[in-house]
Amino acid sequence: MNDIRVSEPLQLDGAKNVRDLGGYPTKSGMTANGAFLRADGLQNLSDNDLEKLAEYGVCRVIDLRSEREKEYMPDRVGNMAYFHVGMLDQMNSKGFKGQGPESMYALYQSLLDYSAEQIGTVMHLLAEVKEGAALFHCTAGKDRTGIITMLLLELAGVPKESIIADYSVTETYMKDVFARQKEQAAANGIEIKDYMLQSKPEDMDRTIEYFHQKYSDAETYLVDFCRCSREDVESIRHRLLNGKQ
Image 1 (cartoon, rainbow, N blue to C red):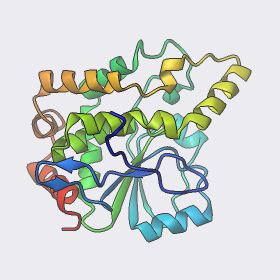
Image 2 (cartoon, one colour; image 1 turned 60 degrees about the horizontal axis):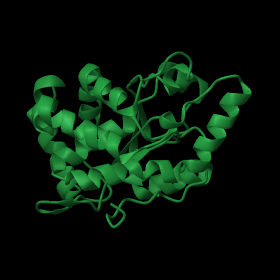
Image 3 (cartoon, rainbow, N blue to C red; image 1 turned 90 degrees about the vertical axis):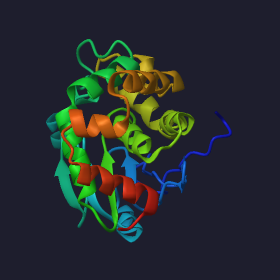
């Protein structure tokens, strides 16, 4: 999978995993740049970062973090429209306290099965953006963000290998951040298990296999389980494949 092209982060001072979903292969070409971006937390963005994102065309931010995370580390969004749709990841959302997921695959399975309402809301907010770019994020840009990204790329017809590569590279981009996070947690007497800060290809591979077996495809899942309108689904797919409407 090393030879598969993956998106690279925007060069920002205060975030390490802000990436465009453009440039991935589909049956009809490539996904479009400048429509949707995935990201880690935005709480440390500098004024220069906000200018860069505005110049890039980002006009809407969708925060997938819990109320706890949002209040503890409020986003800096400047003039971008801000929307909060909380999704629980059993880790960051509760400060790594408690049992946590038994594996990352188990977490992703749970998000697909039990967060359909929130996923439907996120998709509607993405579909509303007809020009400019919409950015969605959680704390690390790995898990909740990874599931939304998987669904978007599946909807566009991006092959599984590219979806897995896009997911797994987060561990590389966030390596230093994860190391500091684990060190800070240990100083507070909290143990973060290694797999919680990893993005192993096999976890997303298993997730996609489970998704296809239970829900068939992205459009079926979004319409039948997340209650998305077909207009929203087509709008998102069009933007992924063609950019501006």
